[in-house]
Length: 396
Image 1 (cartoon, rainbow, N blue to C red):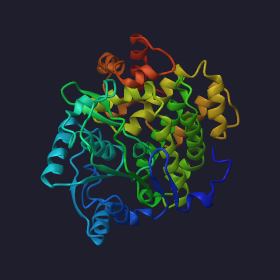
Image 2 (tube, one colour):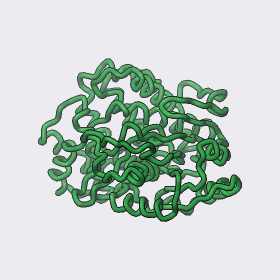
Image 3 (cartoon, helix red, strand yellow):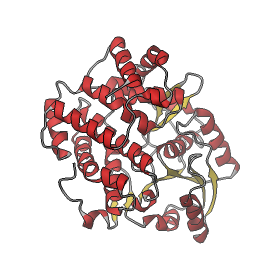
């Protein structure tokens, strides 16, 4: 990795994009939030963040910026690392009681998933689980069924700012499900790499690997989608040049810019789909409330060993994008393991407290996940059980 330099002209200057949603990128763009809210006629925003972020400086900074623009706001922060349906219900209650007209979802992927899930159901009157991805999208007749939502990532990981989907845990079933509606989309993704400068090294690593996996799994899905595939390869290109520096030099704004755009592109890449890393990770997270990016990172080697044979051409292109020297499948996997080792990723889920006796239960639930059906190889229950057990004991 890192044989080529990042482009300072692009990464350190303001950029506006309209695909896949209106996006304002650049160091310091966070300070423009009041202007953007006025442009979208937002007068009383509900700030949605996760419980681990509510006391961080960017939340008070956000409220102060809104106040300076005479925009009212309140905060809802009862969002877990793996957002739950009861937390979404409470957020809807907070939105209605405060007569809010918009949502600003700020934080990592869980905060943005929470905000997007609230936006799906709070005004539409449609029950939350009617938006489950595998179902026919609800037909809505009202003029504005979804409140405006602005997404502001403070990690470079999920790419959740780019798209409409939200992962939420169904408490009764102990499973994560993907929620969405084709007409629900952020009115603005505000992407400012300065917001990631204070992110601790371990969270920078975990979220950065998450972004890398989005690109790898998205690119590996057996579907022709050149927009997603191009985004995946450029995501890997930027991440390969940025990840070590972002972790090891936390004030390196250029590396932070490369990572947050790499994450953004990874979010576009997985609109095409994901795979068994995420299928297993979703269910482990739903049961054991583990960090999503870290869980993905641990599972990655076991699934790559299963998935990559037969994907020689795709592996070659991913390897080239990441500036590796040898482009064989074996070398690609070895290089991924080198990254995981350097970033101090645990070798097994047992280090996160995941027990071996959940093997069959997690495997069966994983096969019900949307990402299972998108995996490049159709895995049997026994094969998924083997992958789960390897991931728990020692994935690399």
